[in-house]
Length: 146
Image (cartoon, rainbow, N blue to C red):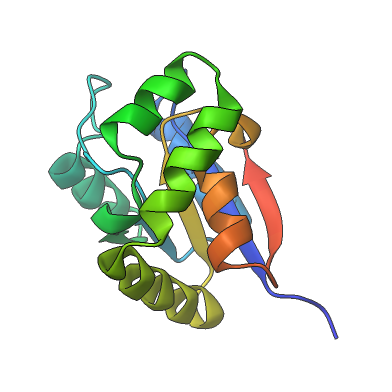
């Protein structure tokens, strides 16, 4: 039996058009925003604008704040200090609100083609890979790069 898939996508160095096109080409139904702070300097990628752009494309939007990286984890990611990011993020995932959000995400991903969204272009340098491994271990990753 095949494992279910979970898509991941970052919006670093992309446009909204390319981002939407990548999601549509993969048949993604829901974007699960796993940023602690769903804000962006990139036009269209802050929470409200992103949700509107996705809705216009027929893609649902869900924000999972508790699955985002805390400030010290974001600083570690910017430094490319993956061991520190892993340690910090593991602590985040032990919080009760993160455990509940992880269960909600797993339920969503089990019933809808879901893409985990964060900023980093490459999933290997982002907490979304750590999240996928911890919360969705039976899912096969499909990393989209718009």
